[in-house]
Length: 453
Image 1 (cartoon, rainbow, N blue to C red):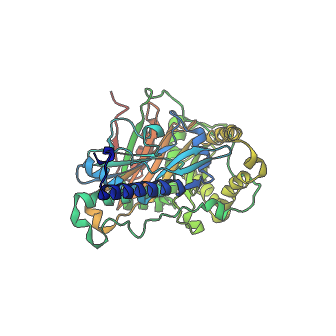
Image 2: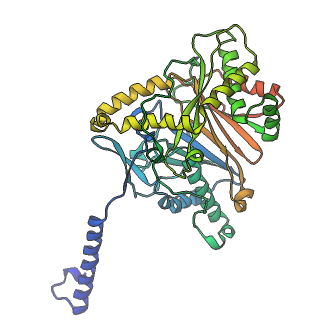
């Protein structure tokens, strides 16, 4: 009432003056403080251009715990962790020449129970302008990320810290002396490692010739198939030793073999089976960035004669990957892209012109691959949290021409190969797991049931 009285005491005037000063200080701080912004890395420029409902460019990494998820604690954990990650506390803005990131600062997106299929398009205007979502289902926490933010390594970084914080809230005894601090192994580095490590280049390294594409009846609109195959790593190693390949090479070769036998029926083809394999560049260039830092290489098998053995397919996959996965070639692959980005014509062209050009380039490169298989590697968890963590999974959204994709990750002694797909007949998946079982590896299969009525 004091603000409306004609007579004011000295104390009242003093209080009012103090409040006015506080408001002035707050207003001055809000007008002088600069909002943090950041450039997109070289790979990220593509994703806003091609993303939409049918090609979301969203990937999922999930963790399965030994206890049912408490949604209130999960929301609280996200509220605590998000402000510590500048790389997730962002919104996407459209400039005249490029898209760019701007500090978001809004409340964290709402944690929701999963009721729909994975890897749906993220509508930022319905998600507090954020480019990721967190959902849960029974024992599982799902992190889904628009690829413009970061690749799988950055996603794992964030999911692990979110899980640790959640477990500390549910089990306060886990806090210890460090409290709610991030673990020392978690990187917050936002360096653009593409720009730092590129060399001027004019040589294109990516395939653009069309590959054999898997076709068939599609699932109902909006449906998205997931199928996990669980294997023990010691058994896999025995089989891989027999063929003289790594686990990654073996699994890619089995996929190629499955396409060759199940879709092409072992017949010659004018188009090769070509599988895109993302390579994490951090170990090759001493990087700890949480931005995207990967390139695609291709495992290729060209069936030109009447009949091939699995050993011949393995050798083709092994040799094509070994030829490409070396520092010199990897540097060449991303240097070509960065060099193009830095040309005067590219920098001066308005964004709508760049978008047209990028869509054309993307369509050519996408149709040059039968599928994509990503290996995010072995995921480790700090010792204190291991009793509560059962498994990790990952999956990718569909992309142009690619209706079946594979993801590999492992935790402890278990490896899981996860198929994501939108075709009604899972013949490639069936052939894939049958071949692995024939080679002597026990496989346990789990799916989300879209192929069953």
